[in-house]
Image (cartoon, rainbow, N blue to C red; front, side):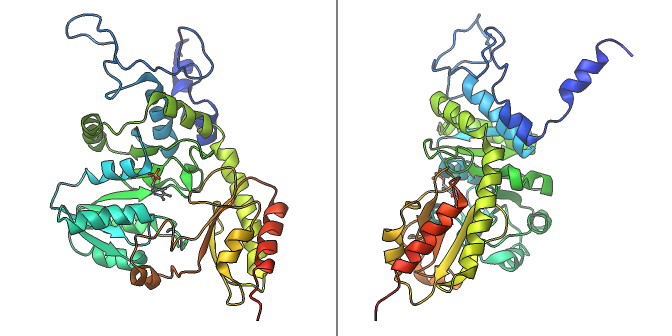
Length: 379
Ligand SMILES: *Cc1c(COP(=O)(O)O)cnc(C)c1O
């Protein structure tokens, strides 16, 4: 065995997500040995000569700080390439660009309200032939006809229904479609869609990946080289890339992703159990995985009062941060989904969604139960 065989094999050993995350950017700058990735704000890069490049020319095309982030994104999702975008919606737009105008898109209906609004607009303006489908059955039925792209979110938002990715991949393949999965809720810590055969994973990195409610960002990760090339060309063309400073903030947040997800999940399990036991609750929607859940208070509770009475949970529209949030999807995140459509899949006016944070679970349970208690209607 040659003296060099061992190190090269060790370098190639695949690393687990926790390890990749803890080391994002470590040794990315051999010149200085900086432990964390430097923020390269420079938008332009000097050319060594005519037709020569350091690998960096202009920041829209490539930026050293964003590259460190993109490489980590690809690794944690088990993809060949990752792209950091200016928001989760920019990530969705990038994914949709993989389908030629006029082609058929099958989209799950029970998805993030903004993504629904985008697909609805594409359908209304005739850019694509968009078919919305409810649940796994609905998706499979829609995929019995040829399609170019199938776009799902699992678990669904805010009903928390898991969709079998492998089954959708199987049906999608037969329909001739690229399979895209929004993995914002579970993150690669709990779900790796590319390993289940999906072609594309996307994230609103604003949520769990960033984790601190202080950076708006999106991510797209692909498993196929041909898709990676298309996305690189498209992103350079449209320019919805993530800036160097935001790339750095996102990396900083991601370093603790694995740890945070475990605690989000532990806390959510305890909150879900406490709600299940409360006589003031009609239904709890929780899959047992991750930090998101939704619930419906019963008739004796004045729902708007609950939103005013919580002290630890903040009544705000996002999710995935260290602090717990509570939202009313019907009037906030899903306001653009027509009432009869959302009622069709169970998103009623009084359903509340929780993003369970990293506080002590007892304090969270006390806050929720206390808010429910003071919101009982007086007769
Ligand atoms: C928030 C969110 C989006 C949109 O992302 P932005 O970063 O707000 O543009 C897309 N999908 C899901 C599941 C989300 O929660």
